[in-house]
Image (tube, rainbow, N blue to C red; front, side):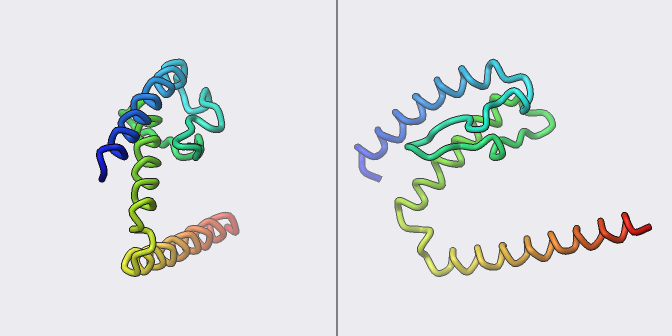
Length: 114
């Protein structure tokens, strides 16, 4: 990564950290968060991306969601999202998720039929 790009990322992180601290400090629960919790280089970080672990504060989960968005943007910027191995892995993961979703649907439909 070029020095200028690194400085841009650092500046974005600092700006996001300040904004997130303001938003997240007031948020006690997920219900307190707005629909869009942050903007990262013009891309929204949605409330649905904030998934705190049982022992994690909402503010920390917001920071993690912003970090994840920064990683995704850098990943795409460097072209890794076009790598055939990545595309193959993503296709497999999507198939596995679809299978898991259909299994959950089947289990729930059987449960509610009883």
